[in-house]
Amino acid sequence: MEITIEKHEKDNFKKLNEIIEKYKEEEGMLIRILQKSQEIFGYLPEKVQTYISQKLNIPVSTINGVVSFYSLFSEEPQGKYTIGVCLGTACYVKGAQDVLEAIKEELQIDVGETSMDKLFTLKATRCIGACGLAPVITINEEVHGRVSPADVPSILYKYIKTHKETQVIK
Image (cartoon, helix red, strand yellow):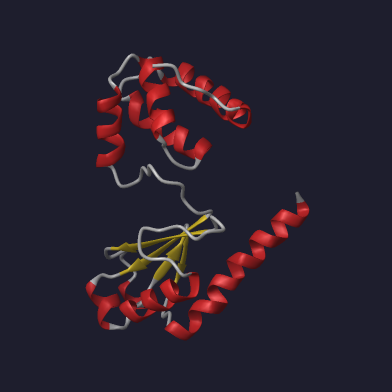
């Protein structure tokens, strides 16, 4: 199967080739290559999975099985910021569902979706081990504790503002 690489994708596929060359001989290399590929592309679309399949001579069904099995991989574009709303027992009892609803309303997306501006992806998570701070949300690696629905707009605004500032600098 011939893969068509668009002009704007050439740099990413060049980086992918370098990663495949670097790791292809290592034991357990597929997970590492998929992780690095997702860092490059932001997700693992069918085209990338097929490309890796051809380069490693591994059936695409095997690669897709790994991608669809592990929750750290995504076949859909993800936002710059992933919001995880903890729905573990302590967070749930302290109002995490209301926080989740406030985020959904503010961003006009549902769990598992990405905002139209590709800035945020919303996920519902299990306990993250910060029960003393319940209810808790994470945005990428940053933890926000004792969040109320009223806090949601200001928390999100901080990330929107940071994104806009980095766009001006570029």
